[in-house]
Image (cartoon, rainbow, N blue to C red; front, top):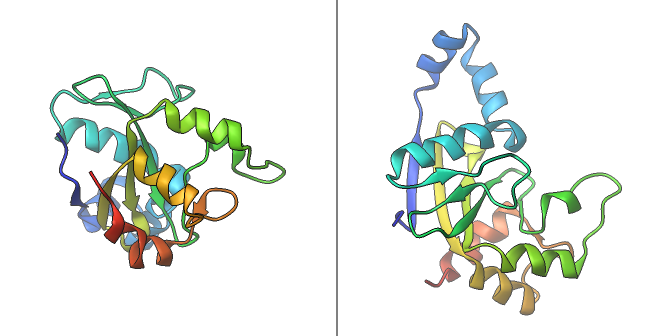
Length: 161
């Protein structure tokens, strides 16, 4: 099983040389959750024997653990992290309780990566029961999103396994 909390580290100077860009370019690109998720999912797969990637981007999960459990990989950005289905995130999209419950019912949990301090990325493994509990206790926002500060200051200390 994957550790409950750990760090991923990159050498941003090495990445900048390989991509032939500046370290500022690397940092800008890899602190964007939409862009870095592809890399983080693969890094988690390669560093955790027996884990597999979802068969497609359209699957309802990102990683499959050795026991067949499905995990969603999400980034904690400056704006925070959301736990609702990605089809409920973005301009003109709204939170739907049934869709949220269905999404959570199909996965074992979330693997959250705090990308704000890239190239050092703190990773938190959060079983889905925590998200259901936080939602019941109204500790998540109305759209199942929580700020980075609230997650780091409050929720990450309350993760139960």
